[in-house]
Structure formats: structure tokens, C-alpha cells
Image 1: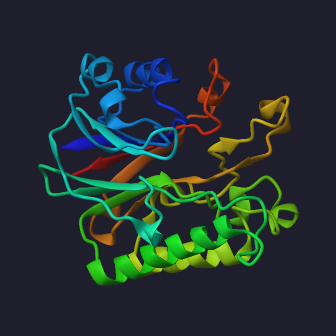
Image 2: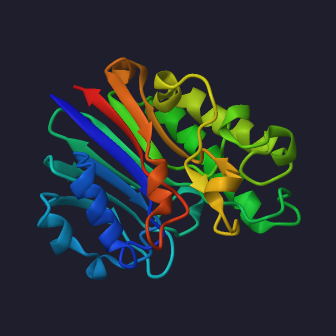
Amino acid sequence: MPFTLATWNINSVRLREALVSRLLTESAPDILCLQEIKTPLELFPYEGFAALGYRHVVARGQKGYNGVAILSKLPLEDAGDRDYAALGHARHVAAKLENGVTIHNFYVPAGGDIPDREKNVKFGQKLDFLTEMRDAFHADNPAKSIMVGDLNIAPREDDVWNHKQLLKIVSHTPIEVEHLGAAQEAGKWVDITRQDIPTGKLYSWWSYRSPDWNAADKGRRLDHIWATPDISNAAHGSRILRDVRGWEQPSDHVPVLATFDL
């Protein structure tokens, strides 16, 4: 049975509940993975999403920061979480569908502004988080799995608006790309978006700092959908909903989608 999955860093689900509802109504993915929900779960807007058919929710919340959630029309069960790098942050949650597919939803630390772990604790935490992801994938040898989320790294030259200018900017530095690549290789993950759209500039994030994000178009592809090799060939229909960045009071990220025939 085919299903469509979306991932979106919403930057506060309570502030942008109307935008999530609009996406669920207009694009109607079967599963939506959210990052930066920024709320304890007792305040999560379950009822509004349930009214749209998304009655199954697996989430980890945190007051004011972080937080990840998986909303689904399809039945799923909680498959746990990990506290990567022992940060005490709600940055990972997993859920399992009835067809046996496990979905991992990640929010990797942004890493601050200085790409030097000696000068910037947050950058060190980001690298440690990625290292623990690598080690976990090595140990778990994931199968029949999909991994999505705001990974806060644009790995390819065509995942950023200007490769040379961003080589020293957090999210595109060689050491971050190397760490993300090691995590991807450890799980043998396939980058589904780039499997479907192998060439050309692709962005899923545009800074709030730009007075005209659309005209400047200084984007980065920070949001990803990966799958294990045993199901990667079942994926198709990848797309990034750029227009969502122009909605009223938007997140600085936009949804990334893919369909799987499983």
C-alpha cells in the first residue's frame, strides 16, 4: 500500500497549528514528522489534527525548545527514542507502522554560529550527536526503515546557494558534511530526495534574516528523507513545497515529501 510521508521543522506547533492544518488539508500526507514542536505534550494540539484524520501520534515534547512528533492517518506504535550525546533534549523519536516499517524522526542540533568546538560548545554537541548517530546505526544495522528530519546540514554543493561562500558557515562545513556522511554510511541510508531529484539546486530552508527570501533565494537543503536499501527502490515522488515559505507567519523551513509503495 503506498503512503506519502512529509517532514517539516515547524518552529512551534502551537504557534503554527493553522499552518500544519493547512498542509494536512491541502497536501494530505499519510504521515507528517514535525521537528521543533517546542511544547510539552500536555499542550500539544492533538484534537485539531485528529479532526483532520491524524489520530495516531507518537511524540516527545519539551517546553519552549526542541521536540519531535509523528502524526499519522495510519496506525503506528511507539518505537522509543534515544538521548543522543546525552543532551537531555527531545530530538529523536521512532514509530513503527503495521507493515513493519520503522520511522525515525530527528532534530539534529543546529550547532551555533562558530564552526569550532573549542570556541563553541554547541558545535561540539552537534558533532557528538552525529557521531552517536553513526555508532547507533552501526550497532543497530537498520532495515525496513525511513529516517527523516531537520538534520541541520546541507551536504552537497548543490544543496546550498553558494558552496564556496558557505564552506566556513555552520551547516555546510566539511567536518559537518563528513560526520553526516559517516552516519549515513553506517546505516547504509539512501538519500531519497536526491535519488528522485539527482541534479540541480534544492533548498528546504531560507533564513528569516533575508528581507526578501524568495528574490534572494539564499537557501539550504537542511531537511532530509532517507531510507534503508531494502525499501529505497519503493520510494518515488519526492518534492519540496517551496511555496509554504511564503505562507503567513511561516517557519523558515518548508515540508519535504516522498511516497513509498510498501
